[in-house]
Figure 1 (tube, helix red, strand yellow):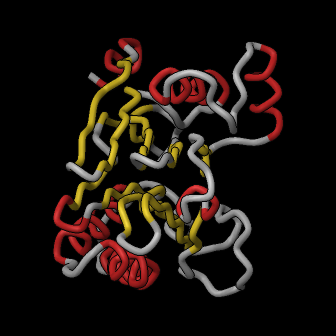
Figure 2: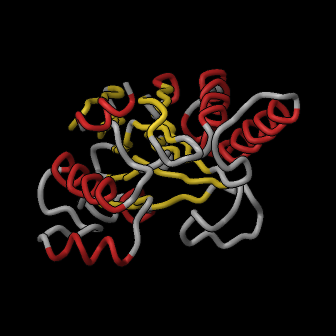
Length: 232
């Protein structure tokens, strides 16, 4: 996932992603959906790294059975399997664009135990906030305050890429990166517009995918015509 933003509320889990894949030169190579939907598990997943890693993780996600909680418990193992399969394919001669060693994934959905939930897992720990372990692919649950029903507020629990500099830029324009004052759609688009302007790996379109108790829904909030023209 070049860009990912996760919101948790009492009524849903929402994942915003961009829609451009980039080559080694930094130019947009193609447009693609980065969200993998597993409606049978009340879950959606997005991954960052080579497209092959995301596709392999998507295959494992579709094959997974049980419920969201069993998927969350096995999420790190699925990420590890996809990562190993990708590296084996590269060793066998498959051409892959991107960093083979640094990949990560985010899982959002509805848990019968915890409510609407978010987990992240990584081949390294640099992209996983507040993770208290040195073990790669250990899933980290984010946003426990909302998940456990202690707050009715919308919580932004994950933003990548994102840092204090981005938060300061947004604040000058009246947007709090971690506390939406308007709709999730407006907030997600404001954050991704900033990511696109200042990060050379975000583009194509902004897609918002929501997991609700009644199902999984996805919509395109905005397409960037210049990106589409470049990819044509």
